[in-house]
Amino acid sequence: MTDSILVINCGSSSIKFALYPVSNPKQPLITALAERLGEQAPLLKIRGELNHTVSLPANADHQAALECFTEHSQPWLEQLQGIGHRVVHGGERYHASTLLDETSIQALDDLSALAPLHNPVNVLGIRLTQTIWPQLPQVAVFDTAFHQTIPAAAYLYGVPYDWYEQDGVRRYGFHGTSYRFVTTEAARRLNKAQSDCYFVIAHLGNGCSACAVAHGESVDSSMGLTPLEGLVMGTRSGDIDPGLIEHMQRSRGYSLADSMDALNRQSGLKGLSKLSNDMRTLLQAEAEGDLAAKRAIDVFCFRVARQFAALSASLPTIDAVIFTGGIGENSAMIRQRIIAAWKFIQFRLDDTLNQQHGDDMGRISQRGAPLVMVVATDEEAMIAQDTLELIQHD
Ligand code: AMP
Image 1 (spheres, rainbow, N blue to C red):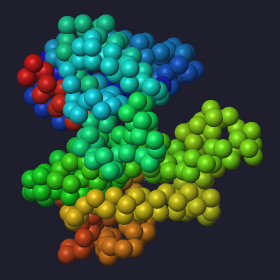
Image 2: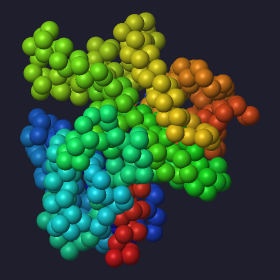
Image 3: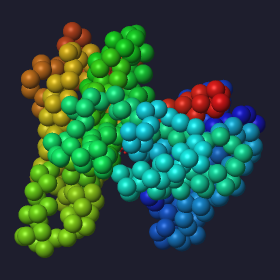
Image 4: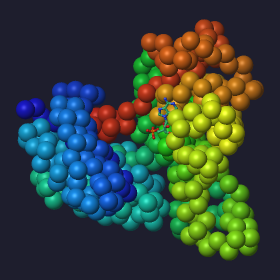
């Protein structure tokens, strides 16, 4: 068996695993997904060198899922060299990935106030793997780190300044690991130094955001203090007027918790369509004449175009508009509608290339027209590479 690096992405009811050989931290040996944890019928699906689907006992938790994964992948874990964790919020403290020790784990726990849905479960994943492999180095890779180059004019809200000073209220931006991967990959394909690259990138998946990249660094992002701001997402509203929370309290007697739940879990594509948070389902329904699905998709696409235009304020030029994430990588229809909605720039997509999700370099625009690309993201590979780099220099 070969030396390997394990990547762990712990969500509220799921864990994603990816095991990479140290010799090639781009191509995983094994990937696995434990889902529906804490529910009636949790499942662990292992793919790659192993092909296994295991039913976990009802209400099985993160620990049970991790133990089950470890048991089934045992031979591949014998020469494990280190573990990389996705951590959603690194606050202003972490500008880059970091080796974990007791002090930094405590710091991540303290950041839970800024990401109550994410950081506690990320820390749980770190603690659980520490118990199983106490001797192995562990690394945290942050969704926020890439955005720490955003200037104050873009990250401050127009609220009392002491909210920032005392409570950390500012825009942080998320999906940073994805944007870092896509920026590096797009620069490579364009044969340019990253320091010469100017991009607007949309990461469109279940969560959606967009980012402006200047000289290879993030200079603005659509997401803010939490991953609720910005684009319309699967179930999240994106930008709203905060006054609507007071309005819903008056008109329906909603508590703060009711409104926050609705904005995080019942809004976005799901809320607008009254049908689904899943873009494939909505495109299918729209094709069959469902006007509510069309309404949701129209709002989604317009909001991305508007966000692109807003982000372009930070850039002297745009080398490429880039799509990534499950929707961005796979839906020619959504890309075409977003580009059509951004009327200020005369984009011309090549329909054939768009249908094929890009040529060799990911281009979907016509030659000579402003460049539009599709670049598949790979956050797990980025985490594996950061982990390897940090443990080799330790
Ligand atoms: P992610 O969170 O990156 O896995 O993306 C999930 C989203 O991508 C869901 O809304 C899926 O419906 C959407 N998606 C995946 N494949 C396609 C496709 N071929 N066409 C449209 N949407 C897709």
